[in-house]
Image 1 (cartoon, rainbow, N blue to C red):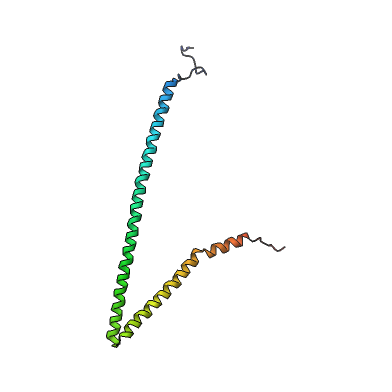
Image 2: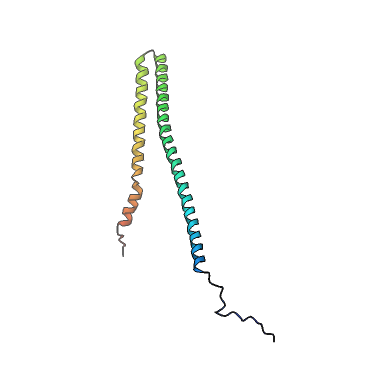
Length: 141
């Protein structure tokens, strides 16, 4: 049988331990890279917040513009309907009254729809279900 000059794996055959200075240098490098990643993440977050803020301001201005343009279109449409009714009937008050009556009907429709939406926001079905779950069940024998 052949014998080898190198001993077999024994608990004493371990790779050499790095020096303390090497460990501290590697830990320092890892910490430095971690700080760089954190700084990059923070810079990205700041950029995203600036973008979100500018978009929010733009949305507010665009909403105001949309309201302004919508009111203008509504007034134009109301005037056109009033003028058309005046031409058909020959009476100015029929035109004005017809547009006013349509506006009142529109307001009533909007208020009823808003009431339904507000009711839905209170989540009545969910609250009812929670209340049913809270009640103890009485099982009949």
